Length: 389
Ligand SMILES: *Cc1c(COP(=O)(O)O)cnc(C)c1O
Image (cartoon, rainbow, N blue to C red; front, side, top):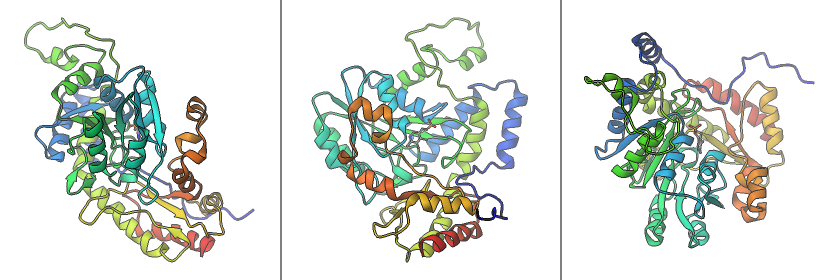
């Protein structure tokens, strides 16, 4: 047994919550209105302003999972339909398709970017295919021109899983404004900004937005805050569909307003750590994570290091060594084709996803968050140089 590390544990991810967020939450708590209300509305407006596209509808929800579900529901995805996505993602990307009784076609990634391979998307299209869900893995934009071209040619909808991608640009334009049917961001605790739990569905399609707003709150045709603040008696509403309970609280929105204002600074702070990692690890038997195209923004939600084929140490042994040194690490993701539910439902074999599988066996995500110092990064580097050097 080695000695326990004398240094404090260095976690894999940590949110950065400042005094502004805390004051805004306290203000919400004192205001008497804690569920969806004025702050959620302000947060939606601020999000649209951040994306800089006045034609966008921004719909705050209590998770990205909820937002993806609402988007697909509004597009009419249902039993008998197929939706194509990557195996190299979190289960939320795909499970929402099953919520609606439709089926998932998983495809492999491009090993250079770890993003969905458009050629494999095209090869997976059948007469039942209705939509494609690209994931901007780690915050690196997927090949959206190719995906949109395939979608246009085959009459498919595109819903972007942008859970990692705030703020990401693709050829100079922010993800969220690329013209897909919908784009969904996550504000889960470890994402590039947080509302505790939360998400944002953005779309330019007014009908999709209208449907998603109704389904966000029980299928009610008028929201609770509108009724509460109306100047005339306003007890009346109508249920027009069996909706969901997916609204974001004003407590979450209070956090979101200030997190959004800091989201670029958070990304800059993570980028400084990424640059340190890149410099210090380049000569080890590893593959550094892919960067954005020149001129594009990468928010570095994750720093995914891959061990080279020639690396004599296993991924699991590297994670073990980091843990023994008091450093958290993770793996993003155990590909969907390996999970019992997805594997058994679609009879999936690793050989169908050689690139995702190869990456999975060699990858680990290093600690990366905005409050991390370069000294923290050097601690991680020190352990990696010991095990791999
Ligand atoms: C986190 C995540 C989600 C789900 O986000 P929630 O807000 O937790 O529902 C979906 N897709 C990807 C790729 C994620 O990383």
